[in-house]
Length: 127
Image 1 (cartoon, rainbow, N blue to C red):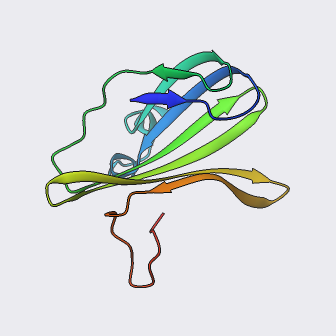
Image 2: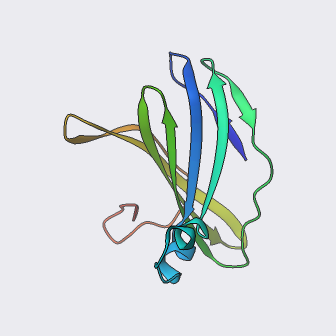
């Protein structure tokens, strides 16, 4: 797993919260610690433009689909990365999108979809 900063400005006090949506949807939410079962929090610190930082390995489960919502927070705001992974012909393929809410509207900052990633009948990704 790697974090790549593609913006033009330095980021300070960066932290990442990765939510495993399958785990989140399967647990019975009674306490805050129940929510923590479905998430991983990583404190990064500061990032300069074009900096890449290796965060470590990430084990994908023995399933055909995995969905993560990744919340990246810094002093100047929060962006959300939607990561969708599917196994196609025995190989993981992915789609990812980075969004930021600005003045009440959702702005897509980055999107990358592998050509083999499955789409719905209208050719859309199910984010």
